[in-house]
Structures are given as structure tokens and as C-alpha cells.
Length: 305
Image (tube, rainbow, N blue to C red; front, side, top):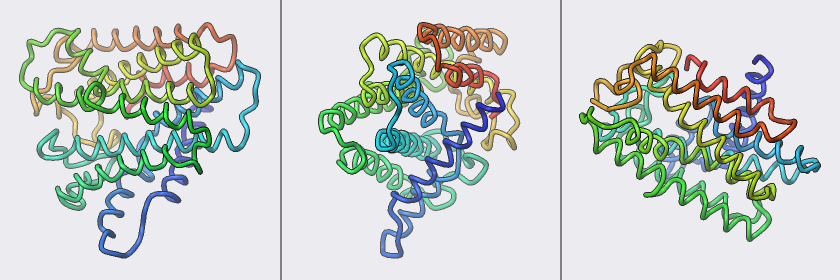
């Protein structure tokens, strides 16, 4: 697990370097907006989604007997950074008073607390726009057909039938603890899982995965997303605020139904472990090169932040 954590840290540093280099900055009238964008996206978070993009790409190169060229790896870094920018946008908006109303994120004041509500909203919007600017740029993704497919796949994952749709349902059903477990699973598969599944999907497009490979990797990522969300629900109940970097008991405060409120802590943990193992089973068909993805599946449910 030590090697995995070191690799996770190294990947995070690579993504921060890309974001620091390519996110806008300056001293003009938009200075506050640029600062807000950078505040929430650079040097923070585990960057598990970026890790998933990069490790999916590496696995595909191994099983297909091809070394990743420097230019191809740079394309993976660009996609991984785009995913993290989209994730940061979603967190900025999620913390707003009209959503979860969370005062802290990643151990520091939430964006709307550090700046203000309208800047936070606009910074999220700008990060989303920047993400598609990068994906659509020939300098970052050379193949025009792949650029188009990546744009379409990303837009679908984060739109009304993906992440945003899941967030809408999550907000609409606050206070409704009568939700069935399959309904909560649907919400979380969209709110959290859609973007995480997209990580493996985008890497599969870039690395020319065949249909069986893509399906196995996307299935793995979907289960990782669900296990990750269940673990988050558990941390919201029994986590350490200083370690996780945000208030606990937020779902209880906002009357948000989740896996813990429906199943209880013990059954929720059992389900998280089952889903994590299911993810691992999805990639057992690959004979080698899966070590980091297996470690990620285990880490997802054992982490304390």
C-alpha cells in the first residue's frame, strides 16, 4: 500500500503542475475569478480520478504490448487534469449555501467562504468551460476523432443524465428517508459514479481499447465510484473532521438519505467491501498490470479521508 500511496502522491503533483501551468492567471479585472479557480483546484484533494485515468492508460499499454510514448502520456495528463477541474467545479457548487452549505473543503474554507457566493458560482462555471477548452485543443489531444469522442463522453457523464442529474435528485430527495436502497444507488451512481466511470472510459478511448477491455474497465470504475460514495457516507458519520478536512454529520444536518441512513453502518460497510471486491473481479481478466488498480479498490474503502 505504501507504493500505491507514493504513486498517488506523484500523480497528484503531476496534475497540479499541469493545472498551475494552464489555468488562467493575471492581475486584470478577472484576477479574483482566476484566484478562485486556482484556489479550489490546485494542491488539494486525493486526485483519485486523475489517478484512475493514468492507471487505466498504463494498464491498456501493458496488456496491448505497447509502451506509452511521451506525447501519449502527456495527453493522458491533460485528460486527467480536465477530470480534476470538472470535479473541483462540482465541489465548489456542492458547498454553496443553496446546496450542502459546507463551510470547509479539503481542510480550508470553502470557495464561497474564501471569496463570495457569486465568485464561487462563476469559478465553477469557468473551470467547466476551461475543461472543454483543453479537451478541444489540438495541442493537448492530437487525434480529431478522439477529441470529438472524448468531448461527447465527458459531456454526457457530467450532464443531466449523469453527475448533474444525480445532484438534482440528491437535493430533491433531502428529508425523504423512505427512499429504497436501489433509488439511493441510482442517485450515487449518477452524482459520484458517472464522473469516476468516465475516467476509465476516456483513457480507453485515447489508448484504443477494444470493446471487451473498455467494458471491463468502465465496470471496474463504476463499482469504484459506488464504493467511494459508501465510504464517504461512513466518513460523514464517524470520520475525523481534522483528517477529512470538512465537517462531519453534514448528511444528517441536511436530512440527506444515504447508504448509512438506510442500511446502518455495519451493512453499509459490508456493501462497500462487496462492491470493492466486485470492482477487482472486473479486471481479473487482465493477467498483469493491475496492481495499482487493485490497490485503489482496496484503498477506496479503507481510507480515513
